[in-house]
Image 1 (cartoon, rainbow, N blue to C red):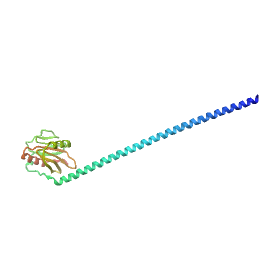
Image 2 (image 1 turned 120 degrees about the horizontal axis):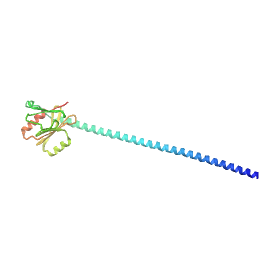
Image 3 (image 1 turned 180 degrees about the vertical axis):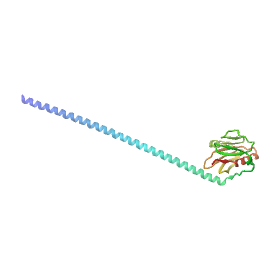
Image 4 (image 1 turned 90 degrees about the horizontal axis):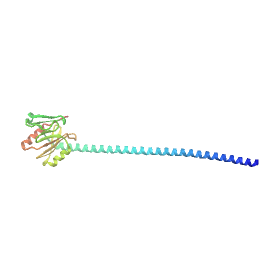
Length: 214
């Protein structure tokens, strides 16, 4: 009987030891698994950070590239305008002041930075920015308005004048449409409908008195 109890005791001890060993193995296994899961999550997080970083760098590179391309296009357009301006200057007719215009009233447009002389009979129905002298109007330059006026007008040809360091570029006919141009930019748009030869003479004399702010 004693021998049987001894055997049973050893079996129980073995079972307990096996149970402890199995429990330790499960614990270790769970611990290793948790570490592996944590490592996997960390690797995934780093991978996502790197992907986001690469995406951000790519977006920044694309933005810089687009900005550079736009700057190149702007510079090329500016060069084209300067070349066009030089070509126009070569064929421009200079406007020379007459003695008569020296006695005309001087109108000063402070916002646009120019002055012009006109006979005393001319009155401004506009304001300090937009001059309206009946058949002669001078307003801030607007490319859309210029195109509209040209579409509505009948012209006899292109004209280019030069006065006080600025070009006056446009068309003449029943309606005159001119813009000033200097440094590849424009500030004023001129519209005129001279009623007769006398009005045309006055218009050219008036344009010859233009001065521009430096």
